[in-house]
Amino acid sequence: MKAHKIALIPGDGIGVDVTDATMQVLNAAAARFGFALDATRFDWSCETYVATGRMMPENGIETLRGFDAIYLGAVGWPATVPDSVSLHGLLLPIRKAFDQYANIRPHRVLPGVEGPLKAQGFDILCIRENTEGEYSGAGGRVHHGRDNEVAVETAIFTRKGVERILRFGFEQARARRKHLTSVTKSNAQRHSMVFWDEVTQLLAPEYPDVTVSHMHIDAMAAKMVMAPQDLDVIVASNLFGDILTDLGAAIQGGLGFAASANICPDRSGPSMFEPVHGSAPDIAGKNIANPIAAIWSGAMMLEHLGESAAATAVLSAVQAATGQGVGIRPGSHGTGQITAAILNALEA
Ligand code: GGG
Image 1 (cartoon, rainbow, N blue to C red):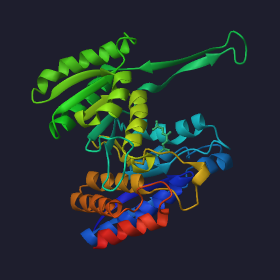
Image 2 (image 1 turned 30 degrees about the vertical axis):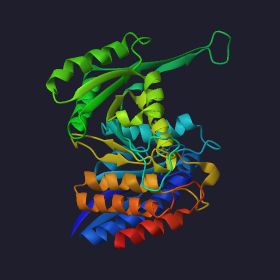
Image 3 (image 1 turned 135 degrees about the horizontal axis):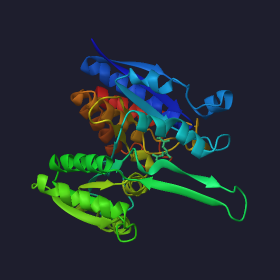
């Protein structure tokens, strides 16, 4: 039987709850479709940091390299470890080390879910640049705590980085409704964002079947609320994409529905799949976290592994469960109930 090697990093807080739920569903799908998920669990988390001084061991990246995919729950436990430490100790190094430069986040309203907007029939794919830009980590601080303290955080945009994420976006648009919106703030940021706009213009003639629009991030924030049905594929920088996809999550009904994939398109390293949401310490371990974003991310992982039929079945089961009213509102059902409804639909 074919077995896919999965590195499981549940991480912190509800990351553990939703990873357990996801693996129940993915294992059921694997059994039904005749393959196996050979999962190895890594307890890399803020607890590990407190115990060892590291979020993951020194050879963590090398350890992950041998896997077909990585599944991550959530990172962060600010009561014991500053978020800037946990994020830079686990999630961001993995994205960068394996050149997972395309972060894909779908936004649409699942059956039965009442999003906050009048418009429900939208289907947006947000592509976030995932390895550079505002998350480059370039910068520093001097004169700590003094009146003359200075903090610098430099966003880095390379031609290679910008071109490849835009190409990825064009390809996605080509496979969908053939409309790409490139999001910048090139009126204010006249170096990096003008450069981004120029690269977009340069590539556009190579994709004559795709219509291209340029939009500033502030206008895009309004558009996603006022007319999301007009949007198809959005491409944005690391930080802009991060912010817009929380807005995307909100219009699709909440962070409990927002899935994501960190893709290494040339497959030189493993890709990583994770819900958009964080660790939500206030509800961790209470069986009330919505596992749908995590399970949808798991379906994206199956698709990436070439198990398209299983991926479609998992997503259909999620839609069947929400269509029956399960998991559609915060607190309406527990993690276990939602998982059971999805498992039932998968077996039906
Ligand atoms: N599900 C992964 C997670 O914990 N995400 C929270 C977060 O803050 N991520 C940072 C980012 O995606 O930029």
